[in-house]
Image (cartoon, rainbow, N blue to C red; front, top):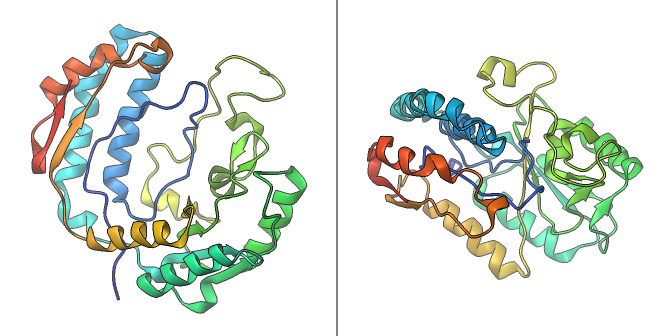
Length: 278
C-alpha cells in the first residue's frame, strides 16, 4: 500500500495575505509531523515580529532554529507515515468533478470505500452558515473512527464557514475567536485565538476526541487535480533539494518579518540540500 507523501522541507516561512492568515489546523496529509512542528515554531517566532518586538525575536531565533534542526535530523522517527487507511474523503454528491477527484485519490492512495462519504452541499455557495456547518459536522461524526487522522475535502466551494476557512472549522470546530474579523473586531488586523495544535505532542494529538487534520483538494478541472495527486505520489520518499527565497516587498503589511530574514539565512544550515537566500 502506498504511503502518503512527505514534505521534505523542514522549515518554511509563509507570507500570508494581510489580515487573512489563520494559525489553524488546515494541513496536507503529506507532511512529517515533526517537520511541520519545526515550521510552526518559526511561525510562532514570526508572530512576534508582526508585533514589532524585534529584540525578543533576535534572542528567540537561535533556539527556534535549534528545535527545527533537532526535529529534522530525527529521520528514523519521522518515517512513521499515514496511509489511505487514515483518510476520510468527503465529496459533494451533486458535483461530478468532486466525485471524480475523490475516486481517483482513493484509488491512488488505497482509501477504503467505507471512508468515502458523499455530502449534500450547495454547489454554488462559497460560504456555509453556522447551521449548515453544524449539519455537516453531524453527517461526518459517525464516520470518524479511531483510525481516521485526516479529512480530505474534494471540492472548490464552499471554502468558508462564516469568517473561518472550512478546513480550519472541520479540524478545530467553528469558533469566531479564530477569525481576525469577528463580532468584536469588524475591521483592522487582530490576533486570533491561539491554535491548540501549536507545539502539540503526539499523545495530545491522539487525545479523545483526537485532533484530525483537514485539507481541500480540487482544481478547475479533473486534469489539474489529477496532476496534483500524481505529483504527490511521485514525491513519495524523494526528499528533494532546492532553494528557499525570503523576499521583502514594498508592501509593509506583507513584509513585517523581514528584519529576521538576513539573520535566519546566516544561521540556517544547508541540511539535506535546502538553501535559504535573502
